[in-house]
Length: 338
Ligand code: SAM
Image (cartoon, rainbow, N blue to C red):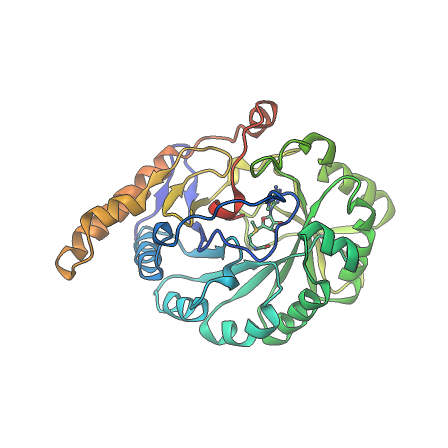
């Protein structure tokens, strides 16, 4: 069996795929308030293309994929897409990141289609604040979505909470209390510089999750948990008697590049070896140049494999996010997939 290994000896087993750059929310740290343009439909990878790419990635040793966006549940046909993915042998884990808005209507179907689990983004437990952060989101719907995901068994459920100074840092303990009552894995995430114009006020909004953790450790008795997933960036803890867990993702204050096992496929078909490096390999262009007749299927597969290997070789040793912040470099998270 093949195994993708990068130039620094890291095994690459995880592929994140943004299936659309469209989203029904405009979170304050992700999208600008004013009008912005989406990628034209014909430039977005078709489901058949994504499936073919994942099949070849799995042939090269990828065993875990995450479907993200934009908001993946706004793309039509997502349930059938997951059904097709499930047919790929040796693909062990299929997960999806969502804002949870449409999850109540989808959870059972997604589970039946073969989705293993979901990550749900939730930055506030207060109705009005949630609406402000997401620019129009409805907290009730997301909470229903979480209930439906629990009921459908899309487990474990991870809740992604991006901490933003002066906006939701007063709610950290409310989120922690949630883990006492419900089997949810709350993950506090550091704000990253993303999007056009969104970065302007970045420094004033960043909070070190490491510092938050240190202050919480003094107050709560956190028991560290050894997770089997190994390479994930979060460090997890539980509070005695609690039903869920608490995780801290310190992309900036303590990076985890040395154990990074992932590459990304953007919604417009580029392989991105590192979130914080703008180096990308244009896979869509390469496969569309080969074309889509049955006769050239073998050539297309060879091209996909070569491009994936090339991207893995380009994976940098570590990200340069601090330089990005100083130079105000930004990227569109929705195209790449958070
Ligand atoms: N729409 C889906 C959602 O809301 O989860 C999936 C896409 S969203 C881009 C994926 C994740 O990226 C979300 O958890 C979101 O909070 C996170 N994200 C987006 N911009 C971010 C930023 N600037 N810093 C940290 N996390 C960010």
